[in-house]
Amino acid sequence: MNAKKTKAWKAAEYEYSEIIAQSMVPFMGFQLSPDEIIEQFESIIRECPMFYPAHLESGLRQLALGRDGSAKERLDEGIRLMLELAEPQHIDEELDALFSNLEKLWRFDLSMHYLDALVERYPRNSLLRDYLAHAAARMGDLNNALLAISKAVEMEPNNSHFMSNKGWIHLIAGNLKEAREALAEAFHLDSEDEVVKGNLEIHQYLMDHGGNYLDYLLRPADKEEIDRLADEEEWEKVDQLCALYNDGRIEAMAQTLLQENEHKRLRLPDLLSTLRQFLRFVHDLGPSDYLLDEDLPFIHTHFKTIMHKFIFKFGDIDANMIEEIYESLLEYYGFLSKHGLASVKHFRAFRKNILAMKNELIEKMQRYDIIRHDDELKEDEKEDIREELFEGDHAWPFL
Image (tube, rainbow, N blue to C red; front, side):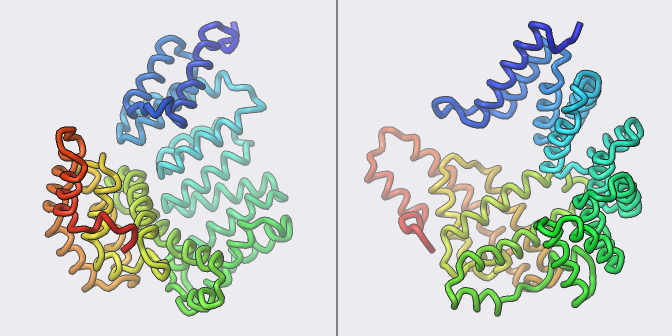
């Protein structure tokens, strides 16, 4: 009997969609913990062991929590069942969702593991070879990446996406001549593709300055161009240009840690999420001329005030969150200092100064957590304590 026709499958399908919906939009503000959500998927699996979406979702969520062992067991079983039960016309779509989620977690090592087996099983599936090429490139295995993407292009020579990816991998390898040939062909196939246009711009920069894709991500910011656009009040273009630099720096750090440090590779999703959220918070506080995340002097000068405001605004944070903010900032600015985008001397001073105040900030966070929940204190009494704890910083919306 077709497993998808059973009552157990239909019930699992309904419950699964309910869990996904509730995790995206909590009912009446009630938010389940990550472990509670995983347990709900595990409950579905117990009732309908063949329901592979629950296996995959449980595995991905456990992976996000760093539980590699149990996560891999769930993913292994989920992929096996998906290949057995998924409708042929939907298999590419379901595989795309899986590998997109692994990409969000920066688990290209696992992507390669599964894709090697899938390519062997489906040797004529060009999309799988494209996925494999991307994962291998991210892991620094450029020879295998080029072999995989070349095979995908051979299978579908008119696929502009595959051809553009071939050019991108050559950019990573620093093969500028080969990159140009692939990107020119991709542009010929689809001159409106924004990814192709972007890769051609990267290629032109590298032709003018030398290097490879990582060098492009770490290129010096064109501050004269930013100032010119600001003077002309082209604020949307200013934001776009600065976002391009900021995103590039973070991608470069993530790419480097992915290939060089297995322990930090497992921490990448949390590290990147914390870093992005914190820097976004700083941008909202900062003056209009604070545009580039690499502006270490700005962060350094205002760090204590920023943290006071952060603790005040997000009253439910704990010591672990402060530790994660420290970890992400020291990793990021340490990386930038190694690559000449921040002063090594300034970074050392920044690290020394913020580490010296960490215990003080944690103590303030803990004290504020107590007074926030003390119903016996009047609001004016709470405000007096806040004034003392945060030295008045909490009362001002901006720095």
